[in-house]
Amino acid sequence: MRLPRPTLLLLLSLPALALIVLPLAGLFARAHLSRFASYVCCPEVASALTLSLTTSVLAALLIVGLGTPLAYWLAFADFRGKRIIDTLVDLPIVLPPAVAGVALLMTFGRVGLVGRHLASAGITIPFTTAAVVLAQSFVSAPFYIRQARVGFQNVPPHLMMASLTLGASRLRTFCKITLPLASHALLAGLVMAWARAVGEFGATLMFAGNLQGVTRTMPLAIYTTLESNPQAAIVLSVSLVAVSFLVIIITKFLLGATDNDKDHTRSIA
Amino acid sequence: MRTFAFLLILLSLLLSLAAAGPAAADRTLTVFAAASLTEFLEEAETVFERAHPGVTLRLNLAASSRCRIQIDQGAPADIFMSANPNNMTPLVEANLAESPTIFAHNRLVIMTPGNNPANLRTPADLARPSITLVTCAPQTPIGRYTRTVIDNMDRSGDYGPNFGRRVLANVHSEEPTVKGVVAKVHLGEADAGICYASDVTPAVRPDVRVIDIPDAVNVIADYPIAVLRNTRERNLAREFVHFILSREGQQLLARHGFIPARPPSSDDTRVGPNPS
Image (cartoon, rainbow over all chains, first blue to last red; front, side, top):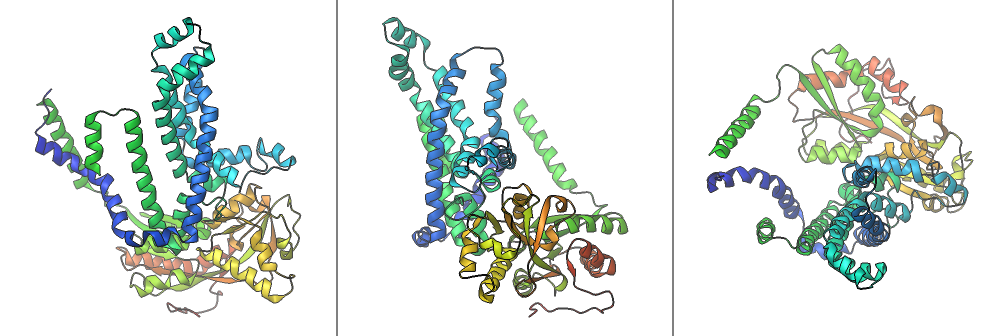
């Protein structure tokens, strides 16, 4: 198949590129990057940064701990209804965050399905930092589980078989063969999940609320301070753009992107 | 070559779509309004559209401060209804809005879930330890009014020492809109929330309890309305303002818990951009 002429192709590609690049350019144009440091130090920005960092790291740890066995199971087990479980795991990716927020409230809220029993035991989750971690984990877990599953499936089966036939235990085979060979995929999935956790907004606002130092993560701080302190909101936005950019580069590197892909990333930069 | 032809067809299709533009028959009036006006405007929309066939009202409901920023940044709007003059005045000064008129007042109340889990009886109970209180963010008009009320109570001395500090320590969330406050109380997640009297809508009323805040410490919020300078429907926009100020509009406001700005008998009294 012959491609259309390069100049025409370029012209046709420009609108889409502008759609993505222009808003980012607008954001950077309004940011006082020279005074970046002074805004990062203002309490509103600093507490949002710290909170986002701690909650997203906790969410990532939770996701790895809970998600790895599930990903491994989905990669190798074969059973009836596996498709259903697959679909359920992917669901939070396409679910609107507001729905996630309502669902979490109905489940872990003070009068929710599970929350009711927790409340009678003296544990309330809404309006706490734990609620933020829960919301972030819910929406970002699929990003890790999906990637980890593919990573496990891409490990050549004969290597695992060889290890087992040479007398290594299943656990040893997993630790010495499967895990190292899938590690890049696991890390890439983890980075994507972490980035999604950092960006979580809707579910956090509905389920965890919005209080500085407790539940006001970076996206909520951007939303809340845009009116009173636009520069703080812009500084936070710029740092989130930088983080997202880094995340894409890291995942591309981890997944061994082709040269073409790398060129593409560079041209956007 | 086939791909090229396909792209050309696609492009011409897109261009023809762009050229056709929106249908010219219907007129729309875009109203940017404080979130506290949600239920009132939904009903007002039906009434106004029935009286003006072919006219569609488009409502953009958010915190007044958010609406103000959107208008300031060039959002296409015909009318702005704010929950305080503070978010209207900058638009008037920037020549983005015509001279505003106060169309309604509102006061604050304390809302608790129907079963009142924390057993709140009076405003003084807000300072009790371990109350889950939800307010609006101080960037919003209601958020600022809330802090003024707490301040007034604190200074009155009738509510015990350090009343303000003890109440603010109970705040578990600063919601971006007052509807977020209502939702969290309505769902039973918060022991109490501070909202407008008009937020106790017919849909919410059966499931919540209201504790009144005495007038002496309460805030009476002024709601201004103005036609925006960029409107392409100036006459229609003015008709809408007249409708809001008419007896019918004012009665509708009263039904939704607002205090009408115009007693039925009074004449038109224009309020400048900076009411005291």
